[in-house]
Length: 362
Image (tube, rainbow, N blue to C red; front, side, top):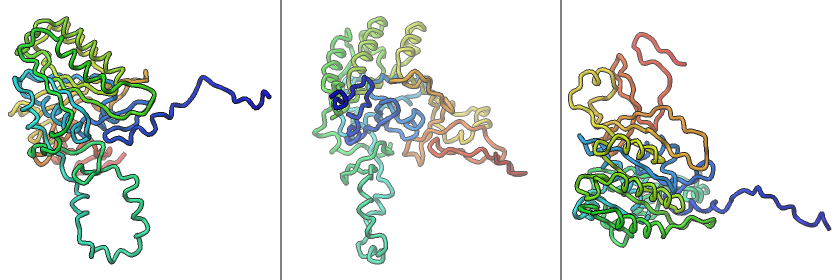
């Protein structure tokens, strides 16, 4: 009798979320963490998979250049491509006009080569039985053809097509001349209530993008404690929801103590910085200096469901525009003697010398 009774244990493996990544733009991470894409492939690799679901991402702006807008545009466009609801708040009078500046996903080379003449496949008589495996685990996909990929390459010269903006759950809020943060807090709470976190499968995730949170155009820009309380409340609501919030702010407009508090509150903390147009010292020290548009510093990486700190190979990366269209992050490399160019973060380099006199390979 006793042997027929199943033994119960308090330790059980959570397998409920195994089917969650079936929805586009969501994938598993270590320790039960779920990731959504930042919209920049290199940044996803740097952070170990993307932005952790339920985390607060803060970006420190640079007063000399609006490089934070590049990160914000890609983050918003990636969510719209994946049909994820979006809440966008901006100090502009009409925030919806900003949607017209979002970049469009680039068409992968594989899709271009797939539109071939069927007569060309007549000679492929050997591997016909493997065709059923091509679409089984294929995650790379173009939304126009009904396919999804976790992170797209976005063409900054091409605006997002209208089909991604019509019929979507997009909520835009203006924080210009707002006397307090009550209205913004209520809209965030209403938005996040659509994505409650439970033990069941994740059906949808949301994205919140707040631009220049403490801008002078806002009536509450001098209420630093109220802004601090709002961010703390927003972080608590994110923890109990399937959403990610990206908040950009200019730290120079805050007191040093408030700036430090905000940086400690962020789960993932990034900062962008402009590069002087003519800096001969940097030009001689860094590889590909003439192609750089700015610098990205990863100051903090989210630690969800773990106490093990994330150790990065590098914390400062150069922001480049590949072919003047695609956003690329590269490790800062010291300029070699022969003046060869560096590589993207996604293509890790080897420990080999580039001197003309000899080749050293470790």
